[in-house]
Image (cartoon, rainbow, N blue to C red):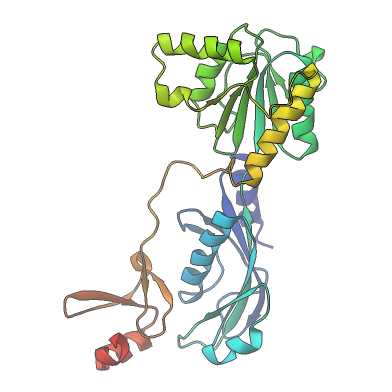
Length: 321
Protein backbone atom coordinates (compact mmCIF):
# COMPACT_ATOMS: atom_id res chain seq x y z
CA UNK A 1 0.00 0.00 0.00
CA UNK A 2 1.38 3.42 -0.95
CA UNK A 3 0.63 5.10 2.37
CA UNK A 4 2.34 8.38 1.46
CA UNK A 5 0.23 8.72 -1.71
CA UNK A 6 -2.97 8.02 0.22
CA UNK A 7 -1.96 10.54 2.87
CA UNK A 8 -1.44 13.15 0.18
CA UNK A 9 -4.82 12.30 -1.33
CA UNK A 10 -6.47 12.90 2.05
CA UNK A 11 -4.68 16.23 2.38
CA UNK A 12 -5.76 17.31 -1.11
CA UNK A 13 -9.35 16.40 -0.27
CA UNK A 14 -9.23 18.46 2.90
CA UNK A 15 -7.85 21.39 0.90
CA UNK A 16 -10.60 20.92 -1.73
CA UNK A 17 -8.07 20.41 -4.53
CA UNK A 18 -9.30 18.24 -7.44
CA UNK A 19 -7.17 15.18 -8.24
CA UNK A 20 -7.28 11.67 -9.68
CA UNK A 21 -6.15 8.64 -7.70
CA UNK A 22 -4.59 6.18 -10.16
CA UNK A 23 -4.05 2.56 -9.09
CA UNK A 24 -2.37 -0.31 -10.96
CA UNK A 25 -4.87 -3.15 -10.58
CA UNK A 26 -3.09 -5.65 -12.86
CA UNK A 27 0.27 -5.99 -14.55
CA UNK A 28 2.15 -8.32 -16.85
CA UNK A 29 5.92 -8.26 -16.84
CA UNK A 30 8.22 -6.95 -17.94
CA UNK A 31 6.71 -3.74 -16.58
CA UNK A 32 8.13 -1.24 -14.11
CA UNK A 33 4.68 -0.75 -12.61
CA UNK A 34 3.65 -3.12 -9.84
CA UNK A 35 0.20 -4.23 -8.83
CA UNK A 36 -1.17 -1.90 -6.16
CA UNK A 37 1.07 1.03 -7.12
CA UNK A 38 -0.70 4.33 -6.68
CA UNK A 39 -0.22 7.89 -7.81
CA UNK A 40 -2.06 11.18 -7.55
CA UNK A 41 -2.54 13.11 -10.79
CA UNK A 42 -3.34 16.81 -10.49
CA UNK A 43 -5.28 18.95 -12.95
CA UNK A 44 -2.08 20.34 -14.48
CA UNK A 45 -0.72 16.84 -15.18
CA UNK A 46 1.64 16.70 -12.21
CA UNK A 47 2.13 13.12 -10.97
CA UNK A 48 2.94 12.33 -7.36
CA UNK A 49 3.69 8.68 -6.85
CA UNK A 50 4.70 5.86 -9.18
CA UNK A 51 2.71 3.92 -11.76
CA UNK A 52 5.08 2.83 -14.48
CA UNK A 53 7.66 3.85 -17.02
CA UNK A 54 7.91 6.57 -19.64
CA UNK A 55 5.49 4.86 -22.02
CA UNK A 56 2.64 4.43 -19.53
CA UNK A 57 2.72 7.65 -17.55
CA UNK A 58 1.89 10.20 -20.30
CA UNK A 59 -1.15 8.19 -21.40
CA UNK A 60 -2.34 7.81 -17.82
CA UNK A 61 -1.95 11.57 -17.30
CA UNK A 62 -3.95 12.40 -20.42
CA UNK A 63 -6.86 10.15 -19.47
CA UNK A 64 -6.71 11.24 -15.83
CA UNK A 65 -7.26 14.84 -16.94
CA UNK A 66 -10.30 13.74 -18.93
CA UNK A 67 -11.69 11.89 -15.90
CA UNK A 68 -11.19 14.97 -13.76
CA UNK A 69 -13.10 17.07 -16.27
CA UNK A 70 -16.04 14.68 -16.56
CA UNK A 71 -16.01 13.40 -12.99
CA UNK A 72 -16.30 9.81 -14.27
CA UNK A 73 -13.84 7.01 -13.38
CA UNK A 74 -12.12 4.91 -16.04
CA UNK A 75 -10.22 1.65 -16.39
CA UNK A 76 -7.24 1.77 -18.75
CA UNK A 77 -5.60 -1.18 -20.44
CA UNK A 78 -2.13 -0.34 -21.70
CA UNK A 79 -0.62 -3.12 -23.80
CA UNK A 80 0.75 -4.21 -27.15
CA UNK A 81 -1.25 -3.19 -30.25
CA UNK A 82 -1.97 -6.78 -31.28
CA UNK A 83 -3.77 -7.56 -28.00
CA UNK A 84 -6.03 -4.53 -27.75
CA UNK A 85 -9.00 -6.18 -29.46
CA UNK A 86 -8.95 -9.01 -26.96
CA UNK A 87 -9.19 -6.50 -24.14
CA UNK A 88 -11.91 -4.42 -25.74
CA UNK A 89 -14.99 -4.29 -23.53
CA UNK A 90 -17.45 -1.73 -22.27
CA UNK A 91 -15.92 0.62 -19.74
CA UNK A 92 -12.31 -0.18 -20.63
CA UNK A 93 -10.12 2.23 -22.57
CA UNK A 94 -7.49 0.33 -24.58
CA UNK A 95 -4.23 2.16 -25.24
CA UNK A 96 -1.42 0.87 -27.41
CA UNK A 97 2.06 0.88 -25.88
CA UNK A 98 4.12 0.43 -29.02
CA UNK A 99 7.44 0.67 -27.25
CA UNK A 100 10.14 -1.92 -26.76
CA UNK A 101 8.74 -3.42 -23.57
CA UNK A 102 6.28 -6.32 -23.86
CA UNK A 103 4.65 -5.54 -20.52
CA UNK A 104 1.07 -4.44 -19.93
CA UNK A 105 -0.90 -2.64 -17.23
CA UNK A 106 -4.46 -2.05 -16.11
CA UNK A 107 -4.86 1.25 -14.29
CA UNK A 108 -8.01 2.40 -12.51
CA UNK A 109 -8.57 6.17 -12.51
CA UNK A 110 -10.74 7.53 -9.72
CA UNK A 111 -11.45 11.28 -9.94
CA UNK A 112 -11.96 13.23 -6.74
CA UNK A 113 -13.60 16.61 -7.11
CA UNK A 114 -14.60 18.62 -4.04
CA UNK A 115 -18.17 17.95 -2.96
CA UNK A 116 -20.38 21.04 -3.14
CA UNK A 117 -20.79 23.05 0.01
CA UNK A 118 -23.32 25.60 1.20
CA UNK A 119 -22.36 28.55 3.37
CA UNK A 120 -25.44 30.25 4.83
CA UNK A 121 -25.12 33.66 6.44
CA UNK A 122 -27.81 34.65 8.92
CA UNK A 123 -30.15 33.32 11.60
CA UNK A 124 -33.63 31.94 10.93
CA UNK A 125 -35.44 28.61 10.61
CA UNK A 126 -34.64 28.76 6.88
CA UNK A 127 -30.93 28.96 7.66
CA UNK A 128 -30.92 25.89 9.86
CA UNK A 129 -33.20 23.97 7.49
CA UNK A 130 -30.91 24.72 4.53
CA UNK A 131 -27.84 23.55 6.44
CA UNK A 132 -29.66 20.37 7.49
CA UNK A 133 -30.69 19.60 3.91
CA UNK A 134 -27.17 20.16 2.60
CA UNK A 135 -25.71 17.77 5.17
CA UNK A 136 -28.35 15.12 4.43
CA UNK A 137 -27.36 15.25 0.75
CA UNK A 138 -23.67 14.77 1.55
CA UNK A 139 -22.80 18.40 0.88
CA UNK A 140 -20.67 20.46 3.20
CA UNK A 141 -22.44 23.10 5.27
CA UNK A 142 -21.41 26.09 7.36
CA UNK A 143 -23.64 28.63 9.09
CA UNK A 144 -22.28 32.10 9.79
CA UNK A 145 -24.32 33.89 12.45
CA UNK A 146 -22.41 37.09 13.18
CA UNK A 147 -22.84 37.76 16.86
CA UNK A 148 -25.19 34.84 17.40
CA UNK A 149 -25.05 31.98 19.85
CA UNK A 150 -24.11 28.65 18.21
CA UNK A 151 -26.23 26.73 20.74
CA UNK A 152 -29.35 28.39 19.33
CA UNK A 153 -28.92 26.47 16.07
CA UNK A 154 -30.00 22.94 15.20
CA UNK A 155 -26.38 21.98 14.45
CA UNK A 156 -24.21 24.25 16.61
CA UNK A 157 -21.07 22.45 15.38
CA UNK A 158 -21.65 23.99 11.92
CA UNK A 159 -21.88 27.57 13.21
CA UNK A 160 -19.25 30.31 13.06
CA UNK A 161 -20.02 33.57 14.81
CA UNK A 162 -18.01 35.99 12.70
CA UNK A 163 -18.55 37.23 9.16
CA UNK A 164 -15.28 35.78 7.90
CA UNK A 165 -15.27 33.49 4.85
CA UNK A 166 -11.54 32.73 4.99
CA UNK A 167 -10.48 29.19 5.70
CA UNK A 168 -13.66 27.68 4.27
CA UNK A 169 -12.11 26.49 0.98
CA UNK A 170 -14.55 28.51 -1.11
CA UNK A 171 -14.39 27.52 -4.78
CA UNK A 172 -16.61 26.92 -7.78
CA UNK A 173 -18.40 24.14 -5.89
CA UNK A 174 -19.45 26.53 -3.12
CA UNK A 175 -22.81 28.28 -2.78
CA UNK A 176 -22.96 31.27 -0.43
CA UNK A 177 -26.54 32.10 0.55
CA UNK A 178 -27.22 35.33 2.43
CA UNK A 179 -30.26 35.17 4.72
CA UNK A 180 -29.58 38.01 7.15
CA UNK A 181 -33.14 39.37 6.95
CA UNK A 182 -32.03 42.93 6.28
CA UNK A 183 -29.54 43.20 9.14
CA UNK A 184 -26.33 43.25 7.10
CA UNK A 185 -27.29 41.94 3.66
CA UNK A 186 -24.89 44.25 1.84
CA UNK A 187 -21.88 43.36 4.00
CA UNK A 188 -22.53 39.64 3.65
CA UNK A 189 -22.95 39.96 -0.12
CA UNK A 190 -19.72 41.97 -0.40
CA UNK A 191 -17.85 39.22 1.44
CA UNK A 192 -19.41 36.55 -0.78
CA UNK A 193 -18.63 38.42 -4.00
CA UNK A 194 -15.01 38.84 -2.91
CA UNK A 195 -14.70 35.04 -2.87
CA UNK A 196 -14.54 32.44 -5.65
CA UNK A 197 -17.99 31.06 -4.85
CA UNK A 198 -19.75 29.45 -7.79
CA UNK A 199 -23.11 30.75 -6.56
CA UNK A 200 -24.10 33.78 -4.51
CA UNK A 201 -27.76 34.11 -3.49
CA UNK A 202 -29.83 36.47 -1.39
CA UNK A 203 -32.99 35.30 0.37
CA UNK A 204 -35.24 38.33 0.24
CA UNK A 205 -38.37 39.66 -1.40
CA UNK A 206 -38.07 41.22 -4.85
CA UNK A 207 -38.42 44.67 -3.34
CA UNK A 208 -35.80 44.25 -0.62
CA UNK A 209 -33.41 42.50 -3.00
CA UNK A 210 -33.67 45.47 -5.38
CA UNK A 211 -33.05 47.91 -2.54
CA UNK A 212 -29.97 46.03 -1.35
CA UNK A 213 -28.46 45.81 -4.84
CA UNK A 214 -29.19 49.51 -5.50
CA UNK A 215 -27.45 50.40 -2.25
CA UNK A 216 -24.40 48.34 -3.21
CA UNK A 217 -24.39 49.91 -6.67
CA UNK A 218 -24.41 53.40 -5.16
CA UNK A 219 -21.39 52.40 -3.08
CA UNK A 220 -19.44 51.52 -6.20
CA UNK A 221 -20.08 47.81 -6.63
CA UNK A 222 -19.28 46.77 -10.21
CA UNK A 223 -22.25 45.75 -12.37
CA UNK A 224 -20.49 42.50 -13.32
CA UNK A 225 -20.19 41.59 -9.65
CA UNK A 226 -23.82 42.41 -8.87
CA UNK A 227 -24.86 40.25 -11.83
CA UNK A 228 -23.48 37.27 -9.90
CA UNK A 229 -26.13 37.71 -7.20
CA UNK A 230 -29.20 35.50 -7.54
CA UNK A 231 -31.98 37.43 -5.86
CA UNK A 232 -34.40 36.29 -4.70
CA UNK A 233 -32.53 33.02 -4.22
CA UNK A 234 -34.16 29.69 -5.00
CA UNK A 235 -37.04 28.45 -7.09
CA UNK A 236 -40.21 30.52 -7.10
CA UNK A 237 -42.61 28.51 -4.92
CA UNK A 238 -44.80 31.48 -4.12
CA UNK A 239 -45.60 32.45 -0.54
CA UNK A 240 -44.20 29.62 1.57
CA UNK A 241 -43.27 29.15 5.19
CA UNK A 242 -39.85 30.14 6.45
CA UNK A 243 -38.39 26.63 6.55
CA UNK A 244 -39.87 25.85 3.13
CA UNK A 245 -37.78 28.64 1.65
CA UNK A 246 -34.83 26.33 2.28
CA UNK A 247 -36.49 23.72 0.05
CA UNK A 248 -36.72 26.27 -2.78
CA UNK A 249 -33.06 27.23 -2.42
CA UNK A 250 -31.75 23.68 -2.07
CA UNK A 251 -33.79 22.47 -5.06
CA UNK A 252 -32.30 25.24 -7.19
CA UNK A 253 -28.76 24.37 -6.08
CA UNK A 254 -29.28 20.66 -6.80
CA UNK A 255 -30.60 21.51 -10.27
CA UNK A 256 -27.59 23.70 -10.96
CA UNK A 257 -25.27 20.94 -9.83
CA UNK A 258 -27.03 18.50 -12.18
CA UNK A 259 -26.49 20.93 -15.06
CA UNK A 260 -22.75 20.92 -14.47
CA UNK A 261 -22.58 24.05 -12.34
CA UNK A 262 -21.18 24.23 -8.81
CA UNK A 263 -18.05 22.32 -9.82
CA UNK A 264 -14.62 23.13 -8.46
CA UNK A 265 -12.14 24.05 -11.16
CA UNK A 266 -9.07 23.76 -8.98
CA UNK A 267 -6.82 26.43 -7.58
CA UNK A 268 -5.10 29.16 -9.54
CA UNK A 269 -4.68 28.27 -13.23
CA UNK A 270 -1.49 26.31 -13.88
CA UNK A 271 -0.09 25.83 -17.36
CA UNK A 272 -0.68 22.30 -18.61
CA UNK A 273 2.38 20.21 -19.40
CA UNK A 274 3.23 20.30 -23.09
CA UNK A 275 2.49 17.07 -24.98
CA UNK A 276 3.58 15.66 -28.32
CA UNK A 277 2.64 12.54 -30.25
CA UNK A 278 5.40 10.08 -31.09
CA UNK A 279 5.13 9.91 -34.91
CA UNK A 280 6.26 6.27 -34.93
CA UNK A 281 4.08 4.58 -32.30
CA UNK A 282 1.45 7.25 -31.74
CA UNK A 283 1.97 7.41 -27.99
CA UNK A 284 1.65 10.60 -25.97
CA UNK A 285 4.98 12.06 -24.89
CA UNK A 286 5.43 14.72 -22.21
CA UNK A 287 7.79 17.17 -23.88
CA UNK A 288 9.56 18.37 -20.75
CA UNK A 289 10.35 14.76 -19.77
CA UNK A 290 11.19 13.45 -23.24
CA UNK A 291 14.74 12.15 -23.63
CA UNK A 292 14.55 11.48 -27.37
CA UNK A 293 14.10 14.35 -29.79
CA UNK A 294 15.02 15.20 -33.33
CA UNK A 295 14.45 18.00 -35.83
CA UNK A 296 13.32 17.20 -39.35
CA UNK A 297 12.83 19.90 -41.97
CA UNK A 298 12.59 22.53 -39.25
CA UNK A 299 9.98 20.68 -37.18
CA UNK A 300 10.52 19.15 -33.74
CA UNK A 301 9.61 15.52 -33.02
CA UNK A 302 9.71 13.75 -29.67
CA UNK A 303 9.80 10.00 -29.06
CA UNK A 304 8.91 7.67 -26.21
CA UNK A 305 11.95 5.42 -26.68
CA UNK A 306 15.22 5.22 -28.66
CA UNK A 307 13.79 2.57 -30.98
CA UNK A 308 11.12 4.97 -32.22
CA UNK A 309 13.70 7.68 -32.75
CA UNK A 310 15.95 5.34 -34.75
CA UNK A 311 13.07 4.20 -36.94
CA UNK A 312 12.01 7.77 -37.65
CA UNK A 313 15.55 8.96 -38.40
CA UNK A 314 16.06 6.09 -40.86
CA UNK A 315 12.92 6.91 -42.90
CA UNK A 316 11.04 10.02 -41.75
CA UNK A 317 8.70 10.18 -44.74
CA UNK A 318 7.21 6.77 -44.11
CA UNK A 319 5.87 8.03 -40.77
CA UNK A 320 4.99 11.56 -41.83
CA UNK A 321 2.98 10.32 -44.80
